[in-house]
Length: 495
Image (cartoon, rainbow, N blue to C red; front, side):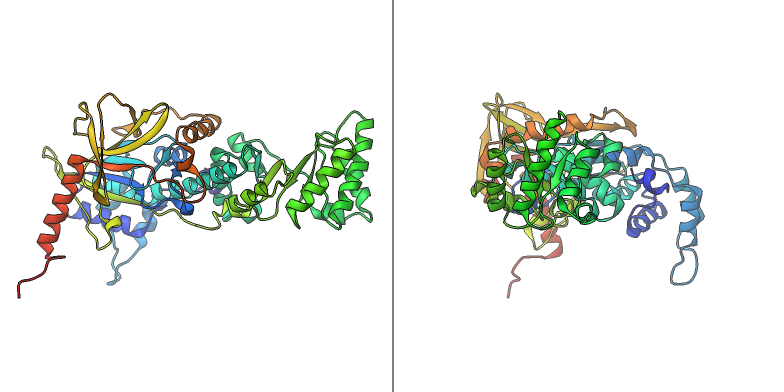
């Protein structure tokens, strides 16, 4: 999608330190080493419990087009160090010019519900390639996953009412707008106002008139009637430019004339004021005039909290138009996705598992080559186990809370399950068929239905069990202990 907007190479869509590290691996003779990296997030967004994985299609598009073009290499060659000499040797730039993606990559399909610390992507291959992909993978997954999750929360608050994404004018640039529209649709929105996104992704588009249309006429009724005459088959009238309830009455007058021509007043839109009160009053006026099928659309800085409150107040709103607070993830502008090395090996050697320790327990990484197994009972998900792919789970397993080893759960071998990470690339060759956007959207709804409602509720959700398999947890503990012993961290010295 980035190419189609900017028509530029994307190979340099990365942080500079990825290139300096890649150069270091090349210069030090480590380029043939193989690494394993995992992409995951540490905390669920919006004070919730889960996240919807989104953005894999753009990841695949990026990787398939990944190439350092001559102009990219020329730019890198122009960068100088502190001694005014070129920072990168020509041999390294030639290496980048010949680079072809050759990694194995596993990922959870788009639309999958994932939880903190679970790998969303696992990539294995030449360490330089894995390192160069850190920034673009995070960029291409963090924001879409955030917006898809926000949309799912908003749609849950709407309790089955259609939600329309109206955020283009407030989105963070062109890429942000396009990405947000796609992600919001996947998360559950019914349509978008973004016509470019509609064309590119096949998302239904919706929209009628703004206040400027009404203000361009001397009389509000003339604005309504003119629009109805022009678009009798798409007549949703914005009624709050002057006096909302008077606007509703004028819309009813126009609706009666529409009916004489064989059309109907599709809806009215409320964009300001007390939406609960105004919608109830408007519904009464519409029903009394015989317009029981005319929908009431509401906008005005809505989010899941406001929608939930309006539902509690019995607001008579049929369709929700949500813009700024959806496409900008207003209350949490970023997902804290990270990308960490967990194993490395030299050609022909055994894997050496790696760990990063920290004074913050949530930042201590988990070594190994990970897979996530999701277990089911009575068609509901009951827990996720993160395990090393070399561990045999045929006899069942023990799940251990990564932050409290006293919290353990035994899962028997006969419990239904599936593994979340599926192969996307094998030795650099794409082996995954991309689903259509409607299929991804349907997957989200199926995923949400597979969890107990307390897991996905908006406020104080029940914590879903996610833990490390017992032997993986022991490996992490042992390596943490060794690392702290090596660095003399966290131990009391003898006095």
